[in-house]
Length: 254
Image (cartoon, rainbow, N blue to C red; front, top):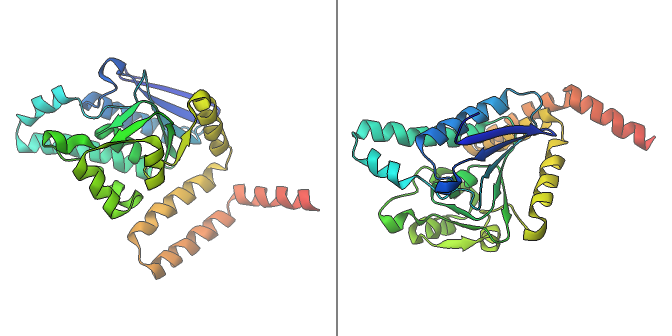
């Protein structure tokens, strides 16, 4: 698909592999654009039930490519804003994607790399993984991810992560909610693939409706949320996938 991103589909899982191992998969404009294209491709592929994002080599992603950041910082405010918005659009596309997006985090996921993982619906971390937002240490701000981070972890934890700039291990990240699940190193690949296959085995329509409603409720008050949930309930129960699932269940219990 691209020199900086590999794309493949197997058993219902589209895998997007950040392919800049010599740069610890640092994010540059080309890689951000390739990720957006990969997500769009997965969204329109009827064979895809789940999207996995991973990194080539030892690390998931070390964050922004600092050489490119230094170059861009000397450009105009409008050009800098356009660059920042491209990463913001990527995070939005991940959240609005019709399929679950799962980060497979090995090694380091730092700064924008941690942001990329946080923007995914699920984070499966290797037990030796290291995560964090160290931007403050160089006078930068992890601005784009904060809208997502403060929804995933308590506000005080979010502040500590972005203002303290410390790196944390996978177990601590799981404890505070930054990581969904920590997998043992010896069986990481097998366990991660089993998780992805299980998720991909679910009816695609049900997964899409579930993800969409969960995030849509974020912007709704309680009563409008209940009303929207009722609408999705009707959409789900009248779908062919639900009818077939109910029939199979009843056939087994008769």
